[in-house]
Length: 238
Image (tube, rainbow, N blue to C red):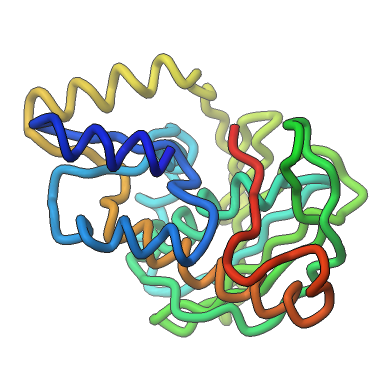
């Protein structure tokens, strides 16, 4: 993806870009993207920002004075491919930027569905600028994805993506899950009408990629130097 992007941006004039996540696979690759981070027309497809269930949750949280620590868990979140979704989502919901991963329980690399690529089993705890935390775990027994949040005042929300259900302040709401094709239409409509969209910009996405890459490099290079070479580790791309 990085090679394709660099070739295209060097030879074509493009009004708006939408990059697939993860945008790259290492800190070395990320340096190439940072050259373009000040451009305002490059977006990254963290599409949960367009899902009705998360739009509703963001509205609820914007009307709440509390800040929420959040958790997401499943039997396999596919962290190598999807880490940026959850890092972006928690920050977007509370308008905060990822600061640092403070702890992890990354267990091991496991084979991905793509040949010669690996996935990560385990999880991490990430702190944001507003002092809230996101915990992600891909080692839970439950198969479906559950996203929950809790404030210091015991306010609570829970999203079950498989049911399209949102529990918030003793009420349950249900929302239709949009297909990627439906979200793409909404994104393109926004780009055409207002020359912008709700996806994270490249500069926003780089922050989440960087904190994650730094942590897995530190963790796995310390424990498995034979199998991983510096920043050239490979993540699953789908």
